[in-house]
Each structure stands twice: as structure tokens, then as C-alpha cells.
Picture 1 (spheres, rainbow, N blue to C red):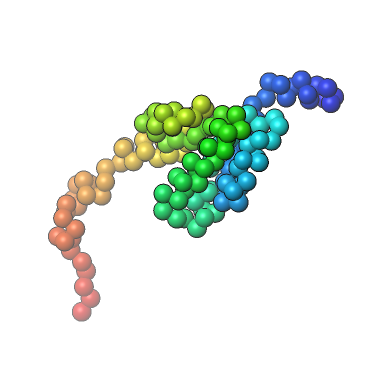
Picture 2: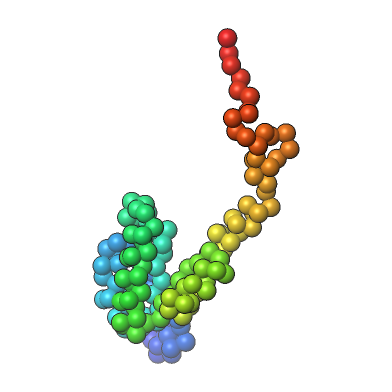
Length: 136
């Protein structure tokens, strides 16, 4: 492919940058303002891991900061969500692109198919009723 063909192809290519570290959150304005970037996506799981798995309020605060930077730079916000409910909330919060986390969707579907341990036949519902083996 020639350089000219690359430039033409770039006109039809959606460029989404992923912000997945605390350091990237701090640089979100500069990252979002980069020429050619169309949208910004925060990777909440990787961001949480990078931050040492803080409470959800920390990750949500960093995500809001990144989203503001994207809006300020005139870029679209893409949100990754686990459900239709979360997709609606993301849209209401200003996301223009929504990506479903298929792993989360599949895990929820699988959990719905498997009864909980308390609901399985032969298992007492009250954990205090379970017999424990004791050795003499």
C-alpha cells in the first residue's frame, strides 16, 4: 500500500484510543487532542488493576475526568458496558459509542443457567445445618 493509499484509508478508519492506566488518565486531554483520534474508551478493569483495585468511586472518578477531556477535545466517548441497563446509563451520561463486554454478558447468562448451591437438591438451605465431618 502506498503512502497516499494509507491516507485515503485513514479517512474511513475509526481511531479509538484506550485509557487504561492512572498515568494515561492524567494525560487524557493531550491524548484525546491528538490529531486523528475519533473517540476515547476507558478500560475500567485494567484501570482498576493499575490503581491497585481501589473502590469503584475511584475508577468512576477517573473515568469521568477522561470523559470530560474527550468532550473538551471534541472527541466521542465510547463506553464498555456489561448490560443493556448500563448501555442506557452510558448513553445518558454522554457516550456516543457503546461496546458490550461480551465476557460479562456471557457470564451473567451462564450464572442464570446454573442454580446456586443453596438451590441444589440435597443441600440444606441454611449453612448452619450443614454437617461437618469431625475426626476423633
